[in-house]
Amino acid sequence: MAAELPTTLEYTAEHEWVDASSPVTVGITAVAADALGDIVFVELPSVGSTIEAGAVIGEIESTKSVSELFSPVSGTVVEVNGAVVDDPSLVNADPYGEGWLLRVDVTSTGPLLSAEEYAALNP
Image (tube, rainbow, N blue to C red; front, side):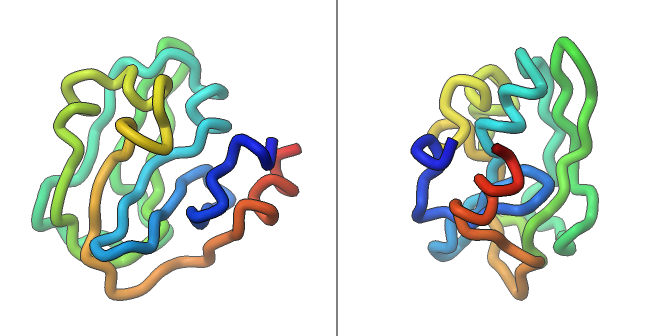
């Protein structure tokens, strides 16, 4: 699996990824997207919302289940990926690219893992 994981990103044990540029970009991993199956609905916080690392910030619904989305960072939401809201299948098709979820002006981060550490948790 490690070959599929972009090594430039950081990860959470709850299957979110973070691109540490400023503002940070947040999404879910291919592991999560594959486990969920066909994603049909994404609920994200609104622009201007203050979010806390570890807190539930939305939901991702698939044909199999509904899963909570946990924030890997604390800060203010500065952008939401409207393309994913309109076409949630982008998360399945390109979880590390066009399927990103939101961008955050970060004040702090929760515990983050390297690609190698995340891969070790998800063999």
